[in-house]
Length: 290
Ligand SMILES: CSC[C@H]1O[C@H](OP(=O)(O)O)[C@H](O)[C@@H]1O
Ligand SMILES: Nc1ncnc2[nH]cnc12
Image: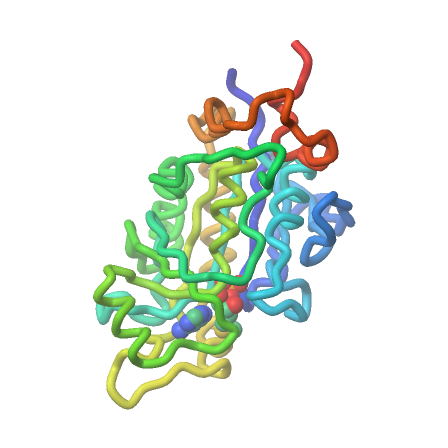
């Protein structure tokens, strides 16, 4: 059945606010997974509800390796989001994906190793498919919005998520190129996996800030990233506004809305009731009566 859109926007490095929200209000949301990165800025553009979360918090106090991805995704779901559009500063691993260009992500390679990456621990063991980790509907609409905002866009990008917070070594950067990765960042995983577990269609736009360090004699630094992000921020805000304005009046269901169907393997009499209580927002659909 068609429904209303409620778009969660996760803002990356350099994107701590969004323009043009009507009835905007920062609201604190409690979760059973701990504290999200910040309050959520709730408002709307026209009839579309928006929920904006600065990924690292306002003022960027939170390190990529210490982000509470579970709390962030749970809070967005609790705030009513139907879909998530995430934005990230990224390094480029390809000559033709130059700083200033935006890359719409299709695939991920996970090199993170130090983060809780699932809601579904013992007592409710669940294996969702990550074969197609991003939502094609949101990705296509966002690519069009970036072009309409006169931005340069690459589609079908593979994002490598590294642990950080240090940037890569040159050997790592060159190896990631051989693996087929196009862009690199420190945050989109486990975020995208958690969004899938929460049955939230997820799209990611990488806003290219640098060439990482695979080119001879070049190395990335924070000052370069921040300067390029300031240049990228205006395009990001304009593209988000156009994306929201171009959404169809009603949201048709997505196959991702039911990603948990047939994914749970723990038998009902082995379910952990405490875990089920914590899953009220993420997987509540499965336990609803009727
Ligand atoms: C400030 S450079 C490194 C930092 O920027 C990216 O963050 P985000 O994805 O939230 O824009 C990258 O992943 C690192 O966390
Ligand atoms: N080169 C890079 N590596 C990891 N994360 C980044 N964020 C922006 N540039 C980056």
